[in-house]
Length: 590
Image 1 (cartoon, rainbow, N blue to C red):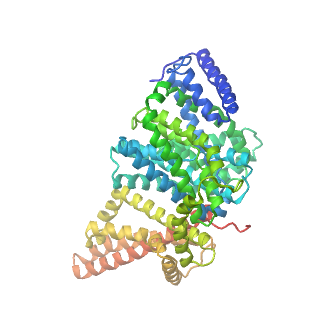
Image 2 (image 1 turned 135 degrees about the horizontal axis):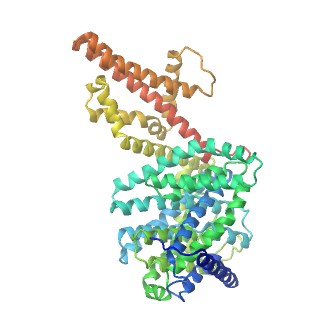
Image 3 (image 1 turned 90 degrees about the vertical axis):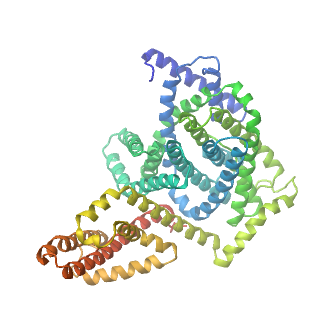
């Protein structure tokens, strides 16, 4: 239970926190370190493990939780969709490769030195996530922010941010279930994807319009207040549905980012993010003691080493695969090393859920410090686009380029011209269709009661056993995205079904734009009418004559399956089109 303190005590505590944060930020700047490190060190000094200046950790944690929500909310707000569209497919391939390398190696090392599987998952996540804020500063300082390599790094870091949000959603579910079996993980991923897709497809249509309407009300504070309210509301909805609040805040930020007023809102939200984010990082430091760092120094060493090497190796290979040269690949590998804010968010989540030992906090701090301090050394001994000279033997880098050359050869055989970009778009579309399939299967699993009600209400459906009926229902729901994975089969099926529908439906639709809605409504109404006639009307007139009832039921099932297929072809096609327009549609202006 949170202790009750007076307003004077609260103001005094806040003054100490923010005043010491200024001092910590100044000292960090003198040492050429990110402010985040200064805040954490301040928390160590003034917290219960230091000089005990601030001891009410519960109130600090309450403020820190708001900081986490605002942190991921701003990550969504700053997501540049146009930049993602330009190099999103290529960057997605690069991100999958480098995250996979870092996550796998981090997990294996953590298990090898004695951490449990859940702790190893958290450590692997911490090792895998680059700090976007620190990376941006490094790119600016090096003068390569607006280069081809700089843009690639930024988009890969955005993908990593999304990956970290997914982990923040999945890991609590694994902790609650107490198991990491594939079904549990798949179910949690399915829930998250379903929430992600439904929210994004609906919200990206409605939220920008709402923001635009409120912005015209001539109330200066209205857009900011609306953004905060919507961000917190979606975070609370996600929490109510059993998901992490982080995914709700991130999605709302992403939806607001598509509004023309996003820049103005971001400028107003960032100071709030900085205020509460500062308290969050101080609260991280309050959980760490100098003794804890010293006690965990030895066990941290292999994790720190693998954190540095896995990021460089993973990014070097990934960047080489998508067509960059040696100097560019080395530059990306070096610049993607620093760990920061989201790694600490993940570490704190593990501690708060009692999923990990508290030692994970000092380990994360050491990983962050080492990954930042090592960058100047790597920049001196490795070739970069700023300084192509190399101290280490070039043959070592040739070894890292070998898997990239093999992969590039495969890509060139598949597509001779612009292979990386084309395969990137194919890969992105493949992932989108897989995501839609997972989301639809999850909805079916959680809708078993409704499917059972439908089956038991209409007797004509009972010519099929329930288990078979459910499989048929599931196949009908996922047929379009499943066929789309295998090339243009889904589009061909859609063309056939649309042609049949236009022959059946002779009446004109209101507009071409609304044709899909009419098609879905028509299918639903026709299905209900057919099922009512074959389940209630015909049996009552046939007086139990199976020679009439059985053929009628078979026709009803055939019509129902056809209309089910057609309905979900329309639904899935609209979802896929919306997501492609949002995420991977090629920018026509570039």
